[in-house]
Every structure is written in structure tokens, then in C-alpha cells.
Length: 164
Ligand SMILES: [Cu+2]
Image 1 (cartoon, rainbow, N blue to C red):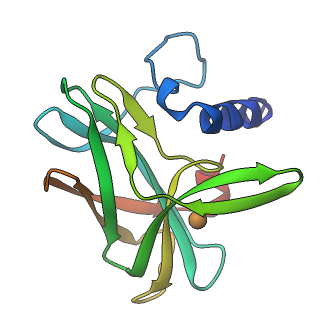
Image 2 (image 1 turned 90 degrees about the horizontal axis):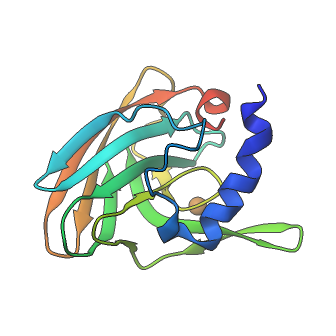
Image 3 (image 1 turned 30 degrees about the vertical axis):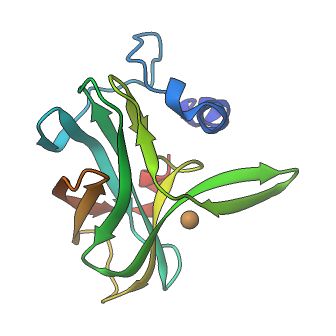
């Protein structure tokens, strides 16, 4: 697919300016209609996906948080029912080396969306309650600084497919 040719510049641009990322500009052809997974007030979780783990004890979950409110919000933690531990990471290129960097939280500015995606910010799952794969469902809870939590379920998809 020629889509994957376009992915890399987009991903790294997203890293450099995560908060600019999500203007719903209609220009991008890769913009597909969003699916809402859950919402609370003016906060919505869109387009969640979870690739089947490529290693025995590491996985990831991705989603977009849309903040239609007039105040900034911050994700402080994310828990996943089949993960023993989770962390919010971002990825950075140091020369040729890709490294993962823990984040304290994820700011979602008023009126904007932040997209967690392969190559950028992600929820890392470390250690599993049980192994899971395609066909399983993960229960995810996103907790915000003000104490609001949004829960949703996401079906596990094939690794290669999810990472496109
Ligand atoms: Cu990570």
C-alpha cells in the first residue's frame, strides 16, 4: 500500500508537535471516519486499537482522545485489564536509535485531539495477566487528572495490520 510510504514522515512530525497534530483538517487522505469508543462529557475516546503482542510480555494500546471542552485535560494513567503494569511512553529517534521515554501524563489541550499511535505516544503493557491475541478483548480505563475515568473495550487485531 502506498499509505505506508506516507506514514513515516507523518509519524515523526507528530512526535515533534504532538499538540498540532489533530486539527481536523480535511487535507489528509489517511483521515478515515473516526469511531467513538466511549465518552464522558465533552471528552471522547476514538479509534482505539490494540495489536496482538509481538513479544511474550510487552504489548501496546493506542487511541485518540478528543477534548471538545474549553479547558485542558491531562491523562494521568491508563490501566488495561490483561496487563500487570502499564506506562505511558513516547518514542524518540536519537540518530539511528529508537528509544522509548516514559511520560508523566498526556496533555490534551482544550478543543484539540491527541492521537496515540505507533511510533509516537503509546500505552505500554508490561507483563500480562494471561497471554492474549487476535479475537481477545482488552478492557481499558483512561484516568484524567480531575479524577474522571473513561472505560472502553477494544478488540485485539493482528500485529502487522494494526501497525500499518
Ligand atoms: Cu513503550
